[in-house]
Amino acid sequence: MVMQKEQIEILVEDGLGEAICKARDLTGTEDHWGLEITWAGFEGLSRLEAHKAVLQVLRPHMDEGSGEIHAVQITTRLPEA
Image (tube, rainbow, N blue to C red):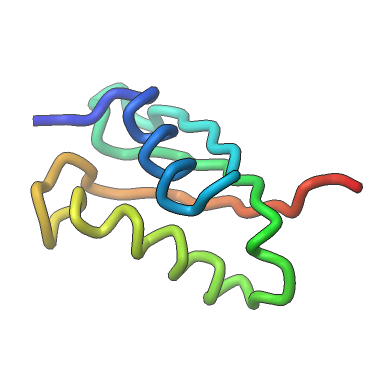
């Protein structure tokens, strides 16, 4: 089973609250995703901490959980002022 682009975007946006997520299928198999996430909550976090925040939301759907997502490439951004 795989997750659709829109499902992943909603999952991240709801999980982080007020985030904007743009998902991109990296391989055409719908299980390797590139995620660009814009969220004010990244303010003051290191890159590692920001990625951990995103992975906490995704982990139940990754290999440790349902396996719907195999791999993610995460890019984090702060909202523009």
